[in-house]
Amino acid sequence: MNIVERSSSLEQRLLGQTLAGKYKLLDVQASGVFGVVFRAEQYFCRRCVRPVAVKVSRQSELTEDTAPYLFGDALILAQLLAAPATSLDDAGRRHLVQIHDMGLLPEYDDRAFLVMEYVDGLPLLSHMRAAGRFSVSMGLRFLKQICRGMALVHAQGAVHRDLKSDNILVDRRGVIRIVDFGLAAYTDRLRGFAAGSLGTFTYMAPETLLGRSTPASDVYSLGLLMYELFTGGGPHLSVAWSADDKTDARDEHLRMKRALQFPPPSTVQNEIRNDHRWLDAMVARCLAVEPELRFADAGGLLAALEACEAGQPLPPLAETTGKTSLFLEPTTQNDVDPFFREVRRLLAARAYEQAIDRLDVHRPPEWAVLDAMGARTLRALGQAYLGAGNPSAARECLEQLRATRKEQDLLPRAEYAAALSDLYKCYRQMGQMEAARACQEEARQLL
Image (tube, rainbow, N blue to C red; front, top):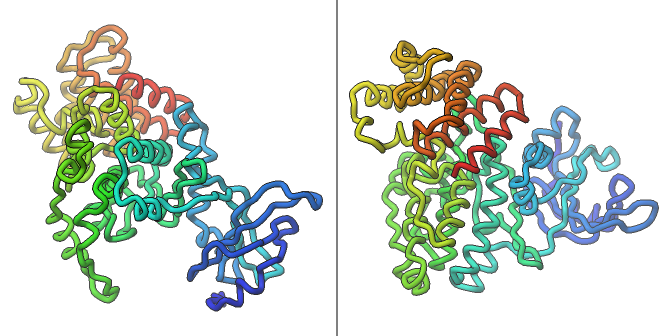
């Protein structure tokens, strides 16, 4: 039977010891129910190589089968960092904490240990408490760094699910580091979300309460963080969430989430009111109750932040979501015709097979010269096949559409980019990562 040592005896037993013959534990950095984090030094041939942080589990008698469940967060983070990188991903890696080593300790009752990069700094929460609220320049600097790190997470198909100011560190150089991936998960390829109602109630997105987390759920948490940075508070901080574990309070919490009213940040921040009014709309979009009305992921939020800083208007919703505007809101007069209105209804209801049946009779042959109707049909078919779990068929439609882009523009730029994003998902699901990255880069260039 596994044993969990909860007293301070574990800290006393390990302090000053050298684990795995190379990690000398110097002092306790944090102590919790599940483990202890030590500041340590890594040695090689009795020479100090670098400072590290070492986490040791309280649970003992672990095996190669049970240990991965205990340190699942480390495995997810290691997989994210090990994935083939683009130049944009490299910028995000700087803001994630590197994993150096992990293993079991037979000499300490088969406990598990994890060795991470040591970050010499304080949580963003500490800086926020000291500052009250941040200047726009400082707040945006921190936010863009968080978005770069989270853009890498979202691009790999994962969600953090517990973004908040005490899970973000600021090192001595002022560089943001995102930590605590204990609730992180990969989204289900077919369902499009990570199941489970996990996280901190105060920072949870409404749909997370219902067990349907997506990258847009992390964007909601980023919106709350943004609001705190620029106003020093927020109505979400004063809501009396139920802490009774014996009662299912999800419906009540969801009602409370939907009832939250956020005054524009400009009402309490003169700098925003005078020079950065676009931040009001930016924050409001992040905090939309419905996830499809937010930025689709951290990459979309980052692109919008950089565009507005450069003096450009806030990008339209269609350019900052993962869905084409065809199925969110009309962009042309033709979008009101009964056929595509019915297609939008079927896709919104996840009736993908029915949508395919309606669209397939209008699918243009591969040899045909496309017109606008054909382009829209291929775009919709790609989305329907992808939703139905048939990435190969979706790829055929979207590649046919992609080929026409070289000859003529039949769809708005944002819709082509959304189609490329879906094509990226197709290739990713099919294990063709080089083709997936090419689509991802092409979509980013379009936007």
